[in-house]
Each structure stands twice: as C-alpha cells, then as structure tokens.
Image (tube, rainbow, N blue to C red; front, side, top):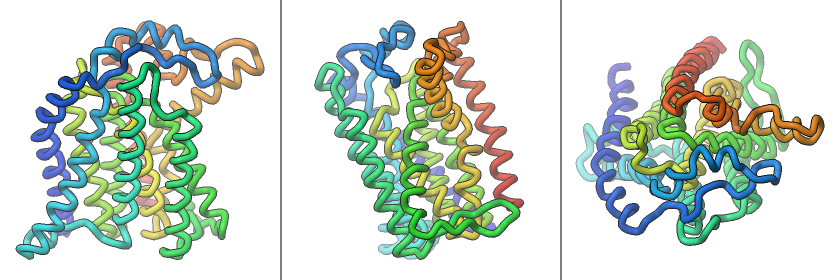
Length: 352
C-alpha cells in the first residue's frame, strides 16, 4: 500500500517540478512571438449573436496575455511519463516502479491527451496569427467526436468494455451503443472546457477533478491510472502557479482539448474496467464543467423560447462577473464547490 501510494504521488511531484522549471522558457517564447489574440472578444456567442458583455469584461487582458499556456501541462506530463519509463528501462528500480505507462490503463489517456493537445495547438496558432482565427467550432467538435469515437471503439473492441457502472446496482450494458455514448460524454466534457475564461478558474477545477480520479483509481488497484491522473493534477497545479491573477498565460485550446479528452478517457477507465462507477460520478466530480454546459444550453433555450436571456451572460461564471463579483471571488468559490463536489463524488465511487 505504501509503495503504491508513492507510485501515485511521486509522479505528481515530478510533473509539478517539471512544469515550474519549463514555465520561464515557455513564457519567454510566448511573449517573444506575441502569442495573444489580436482582437478582443469572441465575435459570436453560442446563440449566434454578439457577446458585448463578455467583450467588455475581458477586452484588455485578451490582447496582452499569451495563449497556449496549456503547453506547460501536457509537456510536463509527457516528459514525466517518458522520463520515468526511460529511467526504469535504463536503471531498473526504483524508477521501474514509478513507470506508469501501461497498455491496459494509460495508453489511451496519454493518446487522448497528446492528440487533443496537438489539435488544440493548431487552433491556438491560427488564433494568434489571424484576427478572430482558429479552427471553426464545428470542425473542433468533429475532431473531438472522431478522437472519442476511436477511444470508444478501443474500449469496446480491444478492452471488451460495453457497459457503465451504476452505484448500488449491476453495470448497465450498452452493447454497441457504448461507442456513441462515449462520444456524447466526450462532447459534453469538451463543451465544459469553456470554463477557461477567468484567471485561475480552469486550472483549479481541473487539478481537483484529476486528483479525485487519482483517488478513485487507487482504491480500485488501478495504480498506473492513478499515477497518470495525479501527474496531470501536478502539471495543472504548476500551470495554476502562473495562472493565479494576473495570469501569465491562458490555458486556451491546446490545454482545454487535451485535458477534457484525457478526463473523458480517465473517467471511462475508472469505470467497469476497474469495477467502478467512474462515468456516473463524472458530472458530480466535474460539477463546474456541468454547470458551464447547462447554463449555456439554458441561455440558448431561454432566448429561443422566451425571447430573452436567463443570465446576463453565459456560461454562468461570466454571469457572476457581470453582476459585480470580482473575478478572484468567482474563482475561489468555484474551487470550493469543486472540492466539495469532489469529496461527494469520491465517496459515492467508494461506496458504489
């Protein structure tokens, strides 16, 4: 038990240390090449109209703070994973014990993280080199669905997973519907990624959620998956060190797509594959992401049906800004909510 705990916690510390170490280099190049948006604002909102309130709240920081801060996260994770694997193969113990690259547990989360990071990086590069550029939302959704479809197929065809865990009951068999269900969950989690919009908000939320999944995986004897989740959390906390207001750089798409796809795969990996309920507790553990998606959907619904807005601006964390909450208050209260939701979701997963 003690050795397994060390296998989980040490990669988190290593990823954090690597993130802190590479941040000055990343910062240098992001500022050198002026990797920020050239025009503030979103252009179009979810409902198709303008975003004047959001644009007014964020008009200055968006054109002076670099994007692509998510590079720090996924580079730290990849260096940690490959570094421990290499040291383990070259020198054996104790490094081989810390190696968390495992075909049955972490190949797919690492794949989703890396591919999402690369696609998001392309989007970010287009965003900072073109006025209001970037990949169209429809294109990004198709790419997320394609990656999720492959991951869902891998679970179904290679790992023989076709059900999801239900607390206090037998798993729900989905058969071939498991793959489209996987895609829907991935799209839902990705949609929650727009929580990246206030300094420190996304970093704190993702760091807490991944650490909760590390706890779930650890109790299911999925030590490699737990170590991966902890390493992600450690890297996110290194990012958060530089994202606390005023942010040195933003998470942006290369971080958002990488983290949301990795989170989706991690949730399914901690499900029936580990005799758990990882997917069922996902909306609870990631409650701020859930609130982000639902508030955006409700905003569009209210506009269409009642011809008026439900919130001053959606997602709801920007609504709190618009009604006068300081950004730091929104951020810290979201962290608190995530910790409480994480504790409840973790308890539910342990009880099953």
